[in-house]
Image (cartoon, rainbow, N blue to C red):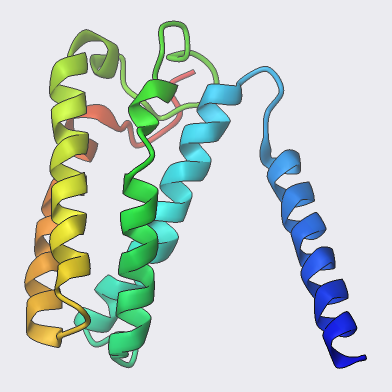
Length: 154
């Protein structure tokens, strides 16, 4: 009986998350929605790790590792493919420089992937995590400085 409740709860949560994902998708801008969702998940996992390192949240090695594992899984998705020709218009903060400097943009994404590997490898050890957080933060900033507008462009 208890197992059936858990199965029902898991099913309800799955349906709810699926509905939320579908609701977030903008029909006319699927690539923009995809990459915005992707980067929101990156931020949702990296933000708490950075906050723990900065002392803004209580430090939890297990919490750091869980989020680092999530980041590693997310970084295996090549979101650069969602920056195809024509997706520079619409609801986006992506600067036109992404499409003018595709190789550099992809290299910066690869740098982020490597930095996330180092974060995951820190295995929650606070000193190593702090160093790795700095590395991830630098890769994010390098890309944001060149390729992310402060406001929507269109």
